[in-house]
Length: 54
Image (cartoon, rainbow, N blue to C red; front, side):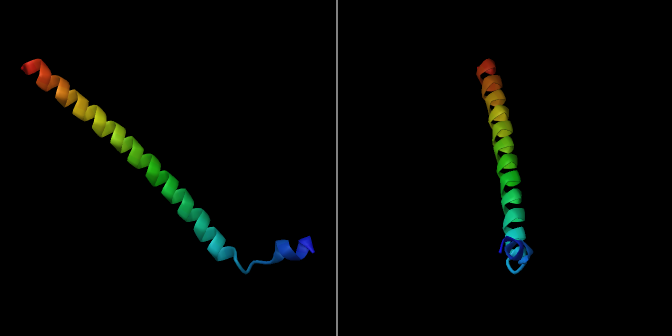
């Protein structure tokens, strides 16, 4: 019974697509978080420079 289940490939493309889509979404989430942290640091630097001038 288990051998038959393991050899069944009828849902393989959908499973592979879901796996690839989830990996891409996790990578995109990480990139967006890094971009957000970088832009926050940049704005903090601008704010500090502006405060030092005034």
